[in-house]
Length: 181
Ligand SMILES: [Zn+2]
Ligand SMILES: [Zn+2]
Image 1 (cartoon, rainbow, N blue to C red):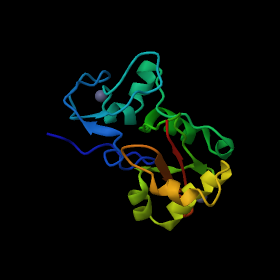
Image 2: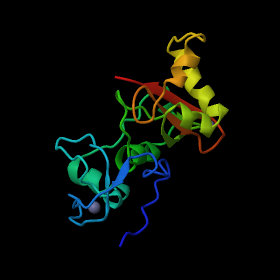
Image 3: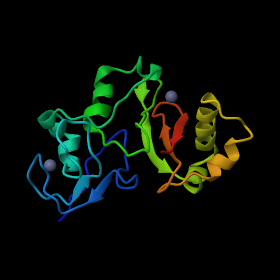
């Protein structure tokens, strides 16, 4: 029997994003087989790959037990974000696996919601504002407008390069970035 996953305000569909997967592994925190595990390795001294259930992640016990963090919010946009929200992102929100060190955006003094890793098709399906957000980030990194369309078309959800898309809970802004090995 599977109970519904806990709610993650800033990562509302962790199965859809691939960050939580079905598993019969025992959770190293609660010792139970819950049917799902976090599909990644938190930042911790101990190797904790695919052995933390989403419930122990959500209630912060995994973070507390192993001094583990799941995300590393950083950058100027975090200056105006309250500490408890930053803590929620670091210690009780599932992260995701990028090709480089993962980023998490903030906007309007709040953490942004992680919508997912996307390829070109998924990015277009989300909408033009998400496409514009990823393009804008590329421009800020020095990409030329003549290079961006072909690069965007090369984005792959399960290959590389991959884009990562976020939306603001307070306004309708989108942000995103992309990376590759
Ligand atoms: Zn657990
Ligand atoms: Zn905003």
